[in-house]
Length: 67
Length: 171
Image (tube, rainbow over all chains, first blue to last red):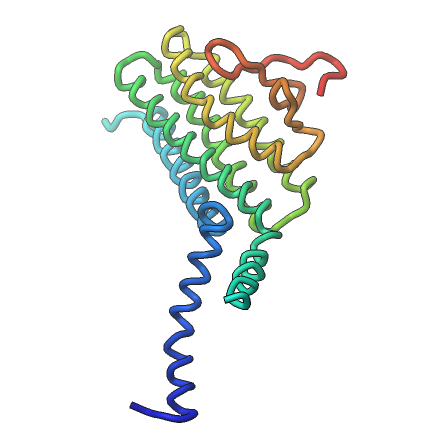
């Protein structure tokens, strides 16, 4: 196991992702629910699905049956 | 320990400015889910023969408009646009919802089915009123009576939220 300055740097490197993940969790909890980006991504997918399904239903009604 | 507490407070406040966008985004997400639920319920009624093909087409055409205006609303929220710009997109969403209610659901002949569809839409209307209140714009405005846009005011009825032409000068 490295010691001295190199060891300290490696320790910090290892801790950064853990700290980052912890900060994200704290921010999400303190800010009350999903982030704006997550909510908008979900909403966009829902709107797109709604439009696609509606267009498919309209097409099914208006397309004449095959001969 | 004290330093850690200060750090947490500082980090938490990074999101302070984003809280409005977050509320709008969450409301838009709820709105979009409510619309999908409405569409599923409406299709069930179609399968049961309670909604005609012509009525179904009118509803689905209105849903296409609502979905497209919803995507534009999300774009405005994501771009962190000013309240008036978000309100403009919100107006388009509410216009599309008005069309869905009046020309889509309003055209359903079966009274019970119409009532069911109106009830399912109440959730979507509630989410939109949240957005209107966060944007804080005059038009549409969140008021004690509900929301108003394009000459129509939301009113609470026994069946849920209904729409009626606003009286002149009403907010």
